Length: 317
Image 1 (cartoon, rainbow, N blue to C red):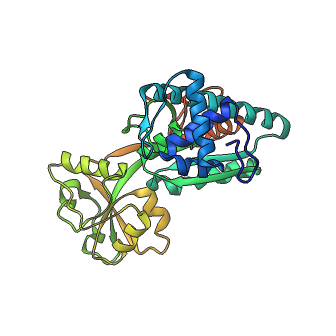
Image 2: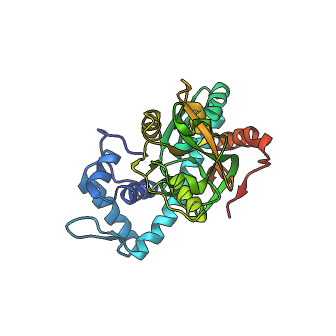
Image 3: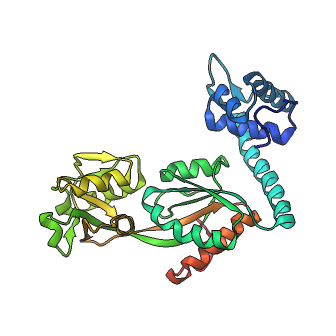
């Protein structure tokens, strides 16, 4: 963002106005968008009105509050994302030529993939110590929306479920599912368990807005049953804490449980009949050339995933 809080405000150039438009699309509120830009609300309104006058059309539906964008405004937004992305990429490319790869990398990650992140960020930071990471835990849908509006540079999410759209993907690993129980739970001695049997247990699951939960619900439905959880949360850590009490059991991604069960208080029972997997991958913008920073991270992802058969970057279906 080109605006700085507390700086003197001057009429913005075209790219700056388009940046403001993207903020308005993100916040859906003039006041919050102006605050995010570090300018006054009248200044933001004037910038949007200037764009409307320049293009000779109304882009924002106004009333006592922000009501949304007109069809013409949505078209301008689409161009704004492309032009702002290109302008940012150009600045970052030139900066990398002068100082080497560095800067700020914003990554959105689904909760179940969070344990995998360090296997990418740690070696990347060792090679490029000037890079600053911001990793945010988000739903798969929120990741795509944030990337579309240029609020994230990359995502780590499911790549074979959501409609990925105008993005590219690098497969990273396959998520496998297990029943998570306390060590003293009667089911802890089991070698496997079927999907149908899990539906009759006191389940502790993620909330329905999470893609992981929708996947679990779908597999249960395929087994002819439906989940009836007695505890739901959007926090994986909170689910684990409740399972540790022995009063609940959970259906989880095995990788997450392995990383966070440091004390050995939990046991994973593989879910079979059938044993299912979901592909987790890196999601990148379908815009080339990438910035040097994004390109380097994509290359690192390919290298890390190479042992699992990820041979390159391809467009999502």
